[in-house]
Length: 263
Image 1 (cartoon, rainbow, N blue to C red):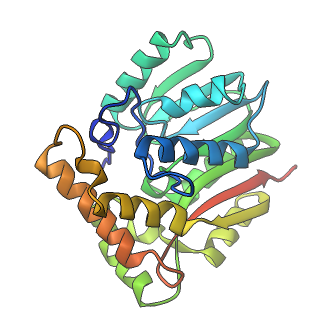
Image 2 (image 1 turned 90 degrees about the vertical axis):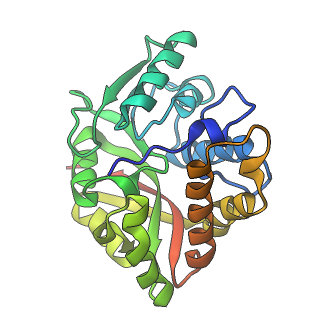
Image 3 (image 1 turned 45 degrees about the horizontal axis):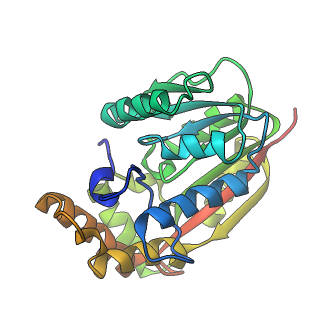
């Protein structure tokens, strides 16, 4: 099942179309939080001038602009499954005058053709847990990256307690394959098996899941022009699930980086 975040409702009153969960460490406003999470991932990936990269699950384009204008990335191949979001991203990339350094690809991350040349970085911002196969995703990243190139993703992992089993049970409601929820131990093993090393997993559950949940439950998504009832209900369900499940023994939100091992 395709998941497309309700970017218009989340960004109401702003010219942005962010769709991630946000890093709420230093803000109580969605757009600032969403921008902060993208920057956090870019910093973790070590993005910089001259880099060529692939962004898997690029949404409506705001993060693409950040990679180029804030981090100085030379070229981005942006892969987005949802045709509507991809179309809006392409239109905005043109309006920003960034056509020469951003290419859009519509398709699923584990099957779409990304690039014919090795890249320096692969990132996935709030998208990896929606991919059809985690192992296929990592295998493709392994072959797309140059030796010692960096993979940087935000991801959801399972703890070991009762809330973890609950998270697995409700995952399909949110378009996430139950079988792709992994413990950190299995997650690290899968990265190693697929040719990665220097693996770092940073837990930021409260800053992200907790912050997003608090914002929704406080009514932040209802300010300004009211969004569709179904959108508000969907956001509320996500927030309450995060509130119930986001704990060390349940659902964990992490920023993970790993380097492709040299041959």
